[in-house]
Length: 353
Image (cartoon, rainbow, N blue to C red; front, side, top):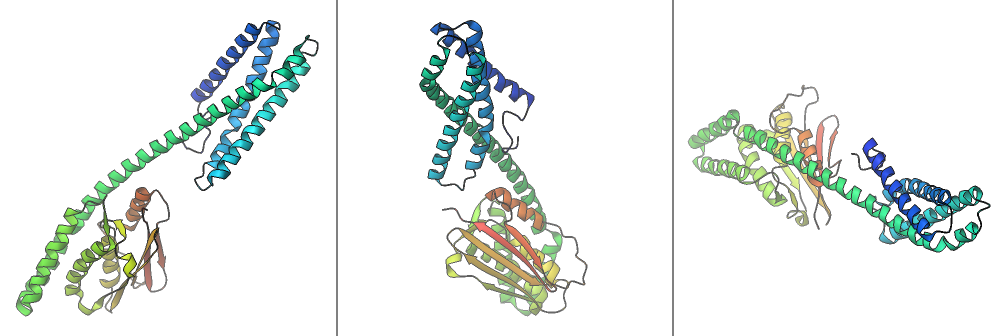
């Protein structure tokens, strides 16, 4: 059920449950008036039905101010004042409507108007108690649906992570990637043995990091950058001066957290659609901005808009956007901008306090 929909009007079963509850309360009302023994049976039944009918209608309407004040952005004093005002309005409307109809239905019953005036006090107390119970039911309902939605999101995230890990492994253990890397290392053994040894170390670190870090966990930006540098170093052997990586990262951002392996597919995308398809030098630039609540990362690369986009294997940009949404429970954490020559992906990473 959508948490914004009225819980008692969402299905026939809930409507019957709500109506049955109020019929039961009307029966209790009748028994209390009969125990008092001052008025005929038809008077007590009509009073109970009229009172519970209006209280039930107002109870249904109460859902909407509860939803308005439960946005999560309202101050506690505003919420308390709002509930106090809505409770006062509800009780005033209930007593006004109930007494108006009862006075007109039974104008000649001896002593009944006196009873109505005397009963205002205990009706206010009883109505306030019912008001608090209705509030509690609504809040329990919203909490239950939030927990269910959270469980569904966690299940979706777990499924997405497993799929992402499989796709990531397929990308990492891609025969073409291994072939290109090993072929570059083989060539370096003849021309620059020291650099060849360095590339072997980088290749092993690259796979070790990828396999040791679970995607549902987090790393620091510094750790992710070291992993990316290993990846780019291997690609730079292939592309040489065509691949240029620059970064602008303030020191206060370097220890901030972000999901494991969230940057690698972005750099893969930049290499494949920028460097690979260009005969000129292509700059891949990573810029970071941060405050205590959020890390903002912008990855941009030059590309040729005249070259048709090729399909890619591994993790797509939409997969990353979905992964961020499920992990942090927020939409719009990834943005994409394209102008004539520059493709930019922006990630907003919330930081836990």
